[in-house]
Image (cartoon, rainbow, N blue to C red; front, side, top):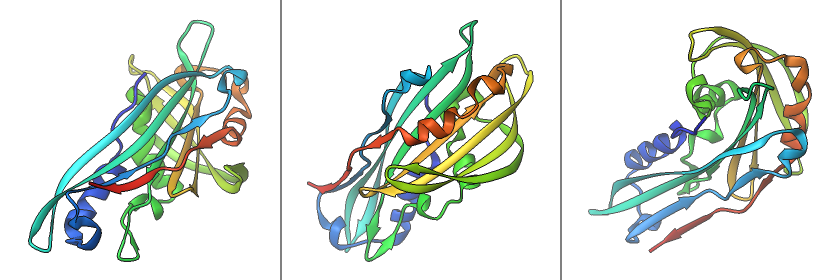
Length: 220
């Protein structure tokens, strides 16, 4: 399994291009870099670290008659719980995306995305499992994430594996704002037909273990 570039990075750059921003963008280059988000001791829950990826997109922006470059960087990590035959039975992704504030306005669309929106944009973190169908909201519960009460929205859905076999899965999505970033957690259980009961409660436990370092905005 591997990570894929998320739509959030691209969407931020489009918004910046449309904004025609000045001030901060008058430097040679402006960077909005998310801090690292991870899961503390995920192995205690039988989840192994699978992939870490920094996703960068750079766009040229015109400001005050001058062209400057803006770089937006997301950080993503993926953890996998494997069944007895070694295939992924559950997975947990945590993505950090920077706040992008210019002239008092937030330019990162993640700020306003609902959990369903986040699921649409970020489910591609699960590589071949990015195509979810029959998504139905089941419940919402609160779980502590990075010291805040996060709304964890739970969905029933269907996923198709490489053999074109459909599997019923449970997807949980949470988001909090922390240290200048938006931190998104997505857990999927029941992959490849794995028993849902075997990973019951895992996503909430992983959400509680999420850690995050402050990102930074800089110019050069």
